[in-house]
Length: 331
Ligand SMILES: Nc1ncnc2c1ncn2[C@@H]1O[C@H](COP(=O)(O)OP(=O)(O)OP(=O)(O)O)[C@@H](O)[C@H]1O
Ligand SMILES: [Mg+2]
Image (cartoon, rainbow, N blue to C red):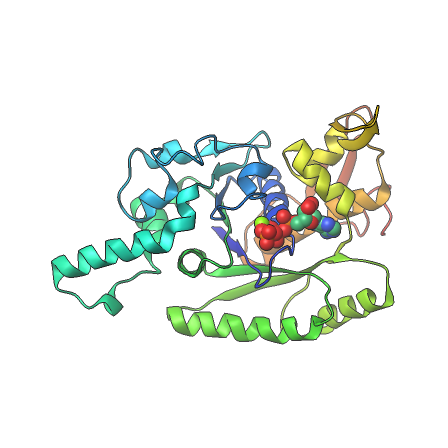
């Protein structure tokens, strides 16, 4: 079973797009993959995949109700399937009120049972739901979570349930600091939750060609403290197109989504994007990242070959056993 929380201390570090890309890569490796969107804000995984029609309906059954053990329906009815085959439990506005709802539940239950509030297992509820009540491992090979970094209770529930982190990091002036901060953070969380938390890998992303960025990349790749299987370049155009394609970067390239100006208006359409070697190389890296998580961290036995079926174009094969993607160069 592959389980990972895509975690970062700071916002805008490409968590959501990375979660989508890892999930689709795992699915294409034949791993039946479920993602949980725990971020109630705009621009979340739910909007990326264009699911969750009921996310703003307070009456609708949603994951919070299930985590708090007050479901309004069947757990399976929460799950939607994206066009690329990944299953998702979409976000819901109630995630924003998770802590206050949880506090009410704790007050009620500790009152009934004459129990000390501090004894209540507030971080273990998602674990209970996924592995004990729903036996998600019987249906899925991989579960990923895109958490809301600021919502402590939800984040801690996510980490307690999945135990392993994948940490995207973005070049910033304080590159060094985040490197040290991460280890400390993993240690602190582990102690607080009284569990062993594994850091699968760190993924520097949005790394450009400037000296500062290159230096930053080297710093990460040369540390012994954690694994850095790939570095993702600055790929704004490719990743931004995901929000128009409503899918992964693989989908953007295969369907050739592009945003451009037509008659003074910005439009996004498939069938327009040029096939670029550097973008093919990025797909290879994303696939390699998923491969690393699956095999190196979780010992799964999976397919190292990715077939890209690009619209009106030659198909491309990415074979991780070869050093370079066929026809693709490193950017
Ligand atoms: N490698 C990349 N290079 C440049 N831009 C990128 C890259 N990956 C993603 N982006 C773009 O950066 C923006 C932020 O990405 P994303 O939404 O994944 O970040 P996030 O960490 O989930 O943000 P938040 O903290 O708000 O949830 C998006 O517009 C996305 O398309
Ligand atoms: Mg996000």
